[in-house]
Length: 302
Picture 1 (tube, rainbow, N blue to C red):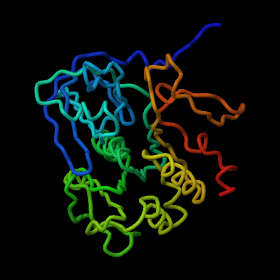
Picture 2 (picture 1 turned 45 degrees about the vertical axis):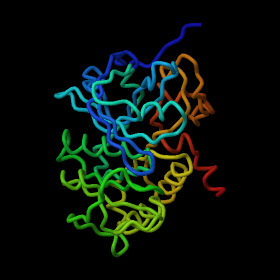
Picture 3 (picture 1 turned 45 degrees about the horizontal axis):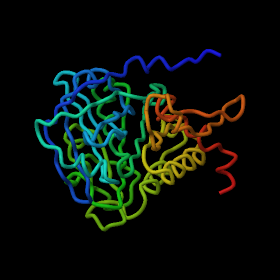
C-alpha cells in the first residue's frame, strides 16, 4: 500500500532560530520573537511551529504563529506556560538559539465571495486570528473586511485600548480593542468575565452572537466565521455558525509528538461525505471545516 502525504509538508523547514526578545505578560503568558527566515518566508495564517524548548528536553512543543515577516525573517509566538517544557522556554533570552521546525499545517482559506471575515480567538487561540486579520488587510485590503473578537479569562497579553473605530451590533460600552489591530485600522473587540474595562462581560462567542444577530440576511450571507481556541469554544462557534447559517473554519488544538504526520498521535475523527475518517491535526489540519468536526446532527441535540 502506498502512502501519500500533503503537498504542503514539503514547505516545512528545519532551522536554528535566534531569540530576538521575549516579553512576559500576566497570567504566565509570553510573546516570543524569533529570527527564523525560512519559516517566516513560508508561513501562512493558521500554521504553527514545532519548537525545541530546552536542549535537555527532546520533545518539541507545537505553538501557533502570531506574526511572520518575510522581509525581516522574523516570527512571533504567543504561549502560556503549561508544563515543564514551556516553563523552560520562558527562560530563554535574547541571542539564544532554538531548533525550529515549521511552518506546519493547513491554514485558513479565506473566501472572497464572503468578504466579512468574523475572526474569533480564545486564550492562546488568539495568535492565528491576529495573523489572519493582518494578512487579509495587507494582501487583500479591497477584498476582505475582518472583524476580530478576542476572549480571555485571564489578563490579555497586551494593553487594551478604547477603540476609535465605530461598530454596530455590540452591547453598549463594548469598546475595548487590541492596540496593534486598532493601529492598523482593523476593528476588534474584547470579551472577558474578569471585569476588564470596556470588554464585553461574557464569553467571546456570546459577543459574536450579538453582532451576527444584528445583521440582516443579505449581510449575513457575506460572513465566514474563523476561530481558534479551546475545544468548548470551538464547539460553541460551530453551534453559532450552524444556527445562523454561515460557514465556519476552526483551528484545533491537540497534543502532538512528531507534528509532521508520522506518529498519528494527534488523529481525530472527521465527518466526510463518504463517512467518518481519521485525520491528523498536524498535517491534515490544524484548520478544518467546523461542520466536519462538529456535525450539525450532533449540534442539534444540544
